[in-house]
Picture 1 (cartoon, rainbow, N blue to C red):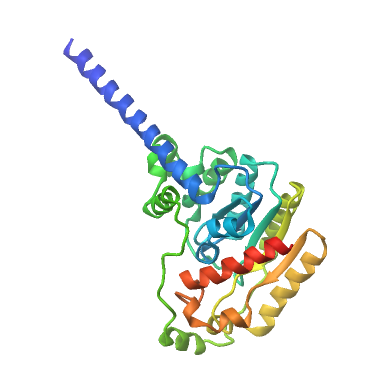
Picture 2 (picture 1 turned 30 degrees about the vertical axis):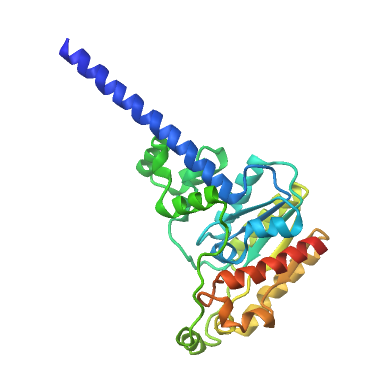
Length: 299
């Protein structure tokens, strides 16, 4: 008799655990959807990495253009991760997207990883079949099933910060520090040393992504995110030109693809726009947000 009572208590605790786990996960995923702007079918989707996260204020772009904007950007993502993100988006909203702003940068086609295990960033969305498959291909079996069973395990502290920003409706860059002279000098010493590589495998994934977007009748704006001149000049000039030439040529093949290089003098020479050589602070974000808003309206 005691064993039956004990079993019932254990069963009740397990049921309560999974019930609370489910309820909390719903609250968390709702906040994350608010941050990305996934509550409604958007007219414009912005996709990119941390450069996009620091450079664009989604809510201000909405206010400036009168369009509904979604921003699906995560730190350290590769061209392969980006395909998974866009495929995931079209699983949610197969129709209605007019324009996709796709961040490009000098390491997009290289094999250099800016972050390890980026698949873990997608755990909150593993209920989506395409994301689930992507995680299954990359995670170990134990890790996969733990996150599959315990839903709140899918959310890490970084993701929780985005969730909080979503609920608070705050999309402004939190950094207001500016680039100091010592960081600039470090970059100057590395001038013309970094080769930009165009790996064929990554180019094929990129072009596959472009075909996916065009198949959903959306136009594409390839945006080269600006960086401080000291960082830009660390890349070998010829290899940077080769990258831009490829993007210009590829965009010329379709009337629905445009290439916008934001490495403009008015941006890249001003250290007060940057928190580090690659990323904008709040002041730079306001400038970039104005530029992309104007471009969207004009085009």
